Image 1: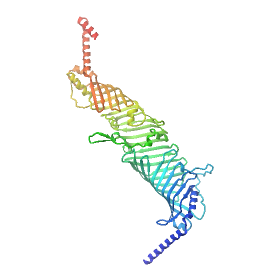
Image 2 (image 1 turned 90 degrees about the horizontal axis):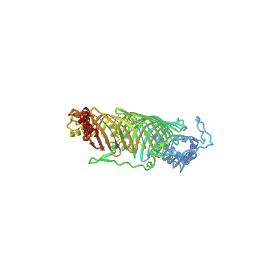
Image 3 (image 1 turned 90 degrees about the vertical axis):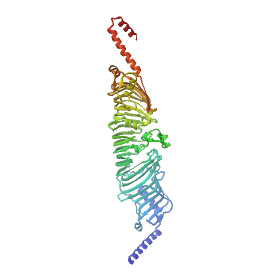
Image 4 (image 1 turned 120 degrees about the vertical axis):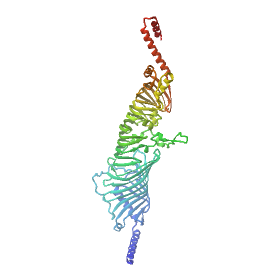
Length: 616
């Protein structure tokens, strides 16, 4: 045992002595010019090292440098700047005059992918054929050069395409290992801060750089992301992803992805797509989702959810997030002008404003500010809806136009979703066309215009029972009685009307309603902003009477004017039963007297009565 320990100690002394001799005999600054030439000959990049190079022995034999920069040929600014660079080298190759760099580590680096750091091509320089894969011959000075690993810590990436806003990725940590076949494993994490929002992103990737710079392919896995900040849900948006295939094509400046499987809160998204980078990027997306919960992805998606209740039970509006100053100065939807896109989306379930849509199919394309939604179909409850339309954002004031078509949609669901305090249920069918500027519920109430035909089946309007109102008024004026009715709602089997919307004023014409108990006709208007209305109906009650048969028959044929007006939550009404009945009785009496006069026209009394009736 003692001999083994002695042998190990001798070997340790030899290794330490060898390292010490190497550090004393080999000056790392001898590698400075060699490193610069090798980087330039292999990549064309200009490497600049500030300060002396020095050895670092423990825990890895390394060469340390001070500040360094890496610049593309002809660029006006460095592509990479770092406060410190460490080159981990292999020991045995140094003995035989070989510099094998196992890992390059950059700390405090700033990587700028901007127009200023792009290479400037020499128009007179020969162009190498794409299929040329022969290695470049380095200058032979007795040394060889190789890099297997790259590590970046506490660094910043600045990305800016020409004409676009700058994006900064901070707190970058990246570890890359590459083999002889240019297959690399990459682990990355970083944080993007933009417009008062923070995106934390991390992933692992397997990268194939065998055809770089012509092409680059990668498989992303273990994707984790979290987005928080202004104009987002309080809990933020976060999720995971896996096995996303990504490809970069240099000649076309095209990034494509496939096999996307991404989660966002309790939503999921999959599919494929691509973007061709340029002054105005061109997007193509074909996506699908089992579930998209927009209420958890979009801030303030439900107006009724943006209020709280105080101790007295009164609704109090929540404090809104601050408006980002830069975006406030931009015209609405101006971001659509900067790109073109063709989008297809199929979703099994979409939740929005508390509504649960099913089998949603969307086809849309944007041509640099002209958004055309050629198809938007889905199911809601037991009904279907279609909402094709367009948005023209090429001018400072946007112009929107949509042609909604609804069939058997529960109107109560829509009223609740958009916070209208009207207690009405029924199956709504609507076919119309509406136009305006901004696409949101508040602007629709205030500044949109349009026309539509609507109908309701099995409707129930809570608060007022038209049949009961008419019958109670008749009871007070006549001896006719009505059957007891405790229902506080107006029920109709069918209801139809022509609708016109003009800057918050919704008018109804040619109203027709029918049920087994009553019929009605009418017209009126609703003020969507003030939430008040004024409706005039002519109501005929067909059933529920008790009393004199002749008078009941008259009442069944008599339309009673009923006016309903005021705030939606505090409706008022007025009835003109006395005047109508008086006119009806006068007309009945006149008809009977005229019949008697015609029957007795030969008598003097009959002649006198006829003259009297003609004067009336």
